[in-house]
Image 1 (tube, rainbow, N blue to C red):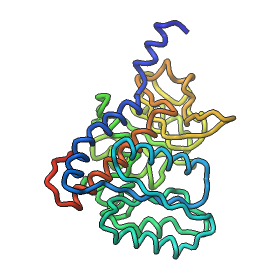
Image 2 (image 1 turned 135 degrees about the horizontal axis):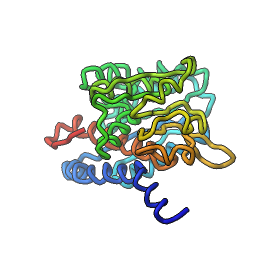
Image 3 (image 1 turned 180 degrees about the vertical axis):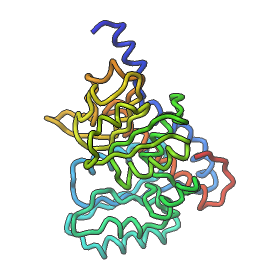
Length: 297
């Protein structure tokens, strides 16, 4: 590949690592001001079992917290933990004034009801943005914390000047964590949104009309050039491990010459998701402290 080709590809990359650094940098002044007032932003992560992907995600969050100056604590429990014990731990953290954010790493073992666990976290400490009360407030654009991945995607589009107003935005995947809240957030920004799932017939008939295509299907290299129209923007939320190589839902090499912009995997949505989690934690600390610090989130 020539240098010119490499340069052309770089111009199409929606760089999540760059945006994450900018988000983290924007928090430094607020964190310093909090600490000057005796408040240390704190997040407590609960990890159940030793799922390799979950372990990596938690480690990335710990590293981001350390870079920002946020106190990060981790409680690790065996796969066999009883649901009642987990709920008791969450209740203790809800009542701890020094903890500003609570995060339970998903997925949980099958004998534990994820919905019950998510609803047990105080909405005011739900920095993942998964509590039904926070999700419901997305419709009125007033939650204390937006879900990290959907809001991270919005931040990426804004950073690169990609307006969704009046655009066709197609989302593959209807999860409560990404697809559903993202659909509402895009509609709040006056996009025309189509949401697809595994039962959707003739998916390509929808994706080929997309100005912005977001794939959160979790199926490696599902999207190739036949799925997209010329000049589309692709946001790849998927992450899979194929033969020891991390890849997303999109066949990057297949679509790169056809798109106007694309998030890489790794280095795209993931780092921004973690950075938004840090932002939510700092916001929680500001709200709970009552300290008059200006923030925009």
